[in-house]
Image (cartoon, rainbow, N blue to C red):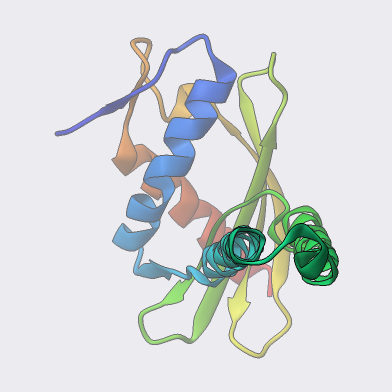
Length: 174
């Protein structure tokens, strides 16, 4: 069995390793990760790079006074895209660590989580339900000692079984 190792006394490292392995654990439960949130970040990043490239090109090919109106416009566009990026990160992405759906696309799940840097617990919000139906929101706490051993090895089977129990419990709440 392969283990992903984390520093057992670093809560941030435990969270990072859990986040890295969460898509694999959810895949064993029949969920496929939805990458649309990440795709939006990529599009925003490329848009910023294109704006910077166009600005650089115009400043090289034109005189400073000829390029100034275009530069002002492009700096304004850059500012708008950066604000959109900030809003997307702050309000859409928030603390989402996994968003996915079952292979038949009948059920969706969104998992978001936070940690206190000094308490070895992962505070999770699990939103799950059938597509189109009212989702069930469940706030739970995952203690890292339940899925990591004393050497910092993550036991993916225990992570998957913990999430399976939480999702089954959420299904019963409907």
